[in-house]
Image 1 (cartoon, one colour):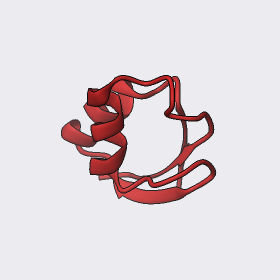
Image 2 (spheres, one colour; image 1 turned 30 degrees about the horizontal axis):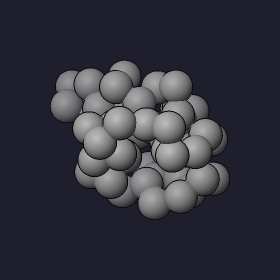
Image 3 (cartoon, helix red, strand yellow; image 1 turned 90 degrees about the vertical axis):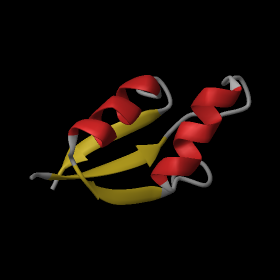
Length: 59
C-alpha cells in the first residue's frame, strides 16, 4: 500500500459532527497538522469525506 500525508488546511468550525469525527479518527488535531497513513480503502473513504478541509500528498 502507498503512504500518504494528510494535512488539514481549513478550519473545521464550519464542518458537521461527522466530518469533525472523521478528522479525529484520522488523527488530525488542528490546522497545519499532518499525519502519514497507509492508503487503504477505509482511509481513502475517510479522506474523501473531508477532502474540502485537507490536502493529500503521496510519499
